Amino acid sequence: MSGQPSTVSELPEWPRYGDEERTGLIRALEQGQWWRMGGSEVDSFEREFGDYHGSPHALAVTNGTHALEVALEVLGVGPGTEVIVPAFTFISSSLAAQRLGAVAVPVDVDLDTYCLDPAAVEAAITPRTKVIMPVHMAGQFADMDALDKLAADAGVALLQDAAHAHGAQWRGRRAGALGSVAAFSFQNGKLMTAGEGGAVVFPDEELRERAFLVHSCGRPRTDRDYLHGTTGSNYRMGEFAAAVLRAQLTRLDEQIALREQRWPLLSSLLAEIPGVVPQTIDPRTDRNPHYMAMFRIPGIGIERRRAVVDALIARGVPAFVAFRAIYRCEGFWMADAPDESAEAIAARCPNTEQIHSDCVWLHHRTLLGTEQQMHEIAAVLADVLAG
Ligand SMILES: Cc1ncc(COP(=O)(O)O)c(C=O)c1O
Image (cartoon, rainbow, N blue to C red; front, side, top):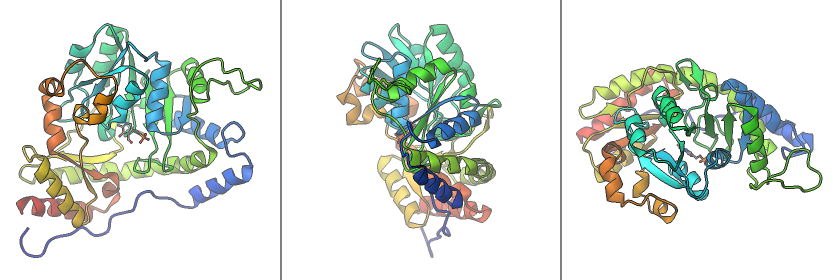
């Protein structure tokens, strides 16, 4: 960090909005019915979002964590069952399973893509395994070919945690067209957002109908007699969120196209910096929305990484330390966890151990910046690391 410190010129803000969101909010307001049972925004959003992802069977819910919970519940997860989750993920992947009384079993991820390692999954399957939950990290699909086969051979379900994968494509197909359930988040930082929100896209209407009951206190849409034929909770999205999300969906293609242009440039510039290794993109993910620009600095260690992230932020780069390994979070151990110590899990998750201590991510709004800003970001990182 010698001489005049370099900085990055002001990057685009997030979230973004315009007249489409304004019009949508007024439209929802003036309907006079602000919940989904009376209005039409949530219904319309479900149709549009589902179609966009290759399945007409979408259900909008309160947030991405609840999307996973509802999906797991209809897939039969509960006490006595196990759900295989990546050890390197946001904690909701495991929390959702644990909230249903299941054991969340963390397994290792690939060192290059940061997604579930199929060999580690295979080793973790037991007679209690009900669901395998790949996370499409930063928009990069987990190896869906290998995981589909593993799941089919073991007779268990796949649930895609697609919280980062709006519009992503695996060999030409989007998450809803891959034959398994996919859960999305619309939290403030996500690729499309209403501040909070979530959706589940199902491969068939029967599962979607069961999920509808779960998300609406066990009550069918037509029920006027408080029958509550099944259990559940209130996970319903409101009309205002849906109106905003309909507008956000119309912006997604253009933003993905821009990020797909910027990432190859930024990652090649980052790769030139000694000690920096960008996330590898598996080319079978032939459309990548780039929810995060992720890279590793192998061997940096947790403390120095924090200092690097702070220095990046001070110079105008929206940087973050990557997720903590879930088995290194206290909350993970407060619910149903495997009968193993954290150290034993760490020993069988060597890649997660590295990534959780050396990985940094940049907000996707960086990839909405100019080519010049990609150069500025790389220059700042080189400068910070040289310091
Ligand atoms: C991988 C992953 N799964 C699930 C979620 C949960 O989504 P939400 O915050 O909408 O509950 C998030 C992030 O927020 C996430 O990153």
